[in-house]
Image (cartoon, rainbow, N blue to C red; front, top):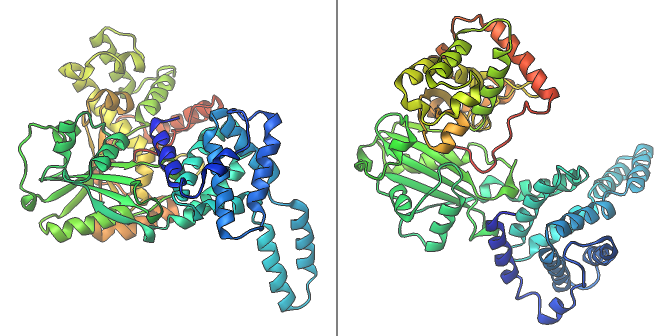
Length: 502
């Protein structure tokens, strides 16, 4: 488990110290850290106590805190067994639902129907969901549930039955993390050290390598914002980092260069969102929509009226994997188009095998001007196709970052050659980066078009990259065949990237 979650658990335990006295701690069931089957009955009994209505509010909070404290004493295996016990013993009562459903069908008058409908709604709320709600009343209880869901996300792949618990917990978190509850705070070099340390720890897009690097990102021509929820006042949910520049930024190395001269903020005409990092893995899949970017844009426009352009400089976390898959299929075909020929030519120049990994893993291949010139146009063209090629299951773009920004009303403005030549950038996207442009007058229109028909807004210069010597329809056919092959092999999907969204 990530070390930052351990820090969260420690913070929760301290918050519960006022509820749990020494006697309560001493009365915790004596169970093994991995919660073996012989100990699950004790835990189940404790869960039943939490669901009982005996005692008042203080007793209910104490029982919930005891159960939560027990969970925190378990190791990874024990926590998985704990969650499985919760699912196995406290799911929806199927017989009660069936009985209520029959009664609902047999009701003759409106009053009886409304009463039975209420009973049906109550029957459909699982005991496990009612138990989870009890933690909301505890100090740091929401943080406990967010971190518990982070555990769930890790365990549910190997234990599909945990999906039902995840669904219940996600439903609760969605209702509690409405965007109307969030507050925004600007982070500066004068912010509390604990908050600055969290910014360094949680940065998921472009790692902050030193305090000097952090200071540079908080200079006068930079802005950094953190979003908070009142139930987690000391834990930021999201960090957004912005650079104030002139014109669209094409290289993150140039953008983060500590030796670059500062720009007077009041003279900048462009705000570049270069990092949006989710700090809470347990909130994966819970969208705050365009609210985040809109609020930052509003704040920036009020402070700096000369800002006219709002854009991102974003990574392409799945492009390299997609690209490797594309070339593997293309090189094995009967005919080779200009893109495959470019890879073969680059391989000859580098004296490596004519395979995508051999070429793109060659040390500093982009510094060889002839190799770079050979690959530039084919890679830009393929990247444009990657960004606009829909996945079959929902017609949304393949790239998770593209889905985020297009869904929030942006358009694909420009693909940047060698925009990120860090090791991570070359491994993820062969160094390519994307500008997603937020045109304020078009945001609502783009959101609607994307939501209703997954229409992808893209600038003409991006669309023009899709036209090459190869017949477009034949290339689409080949890509679909390739994706079908890879899907059967279990490797077609592009994984979500919950911690980075820029």
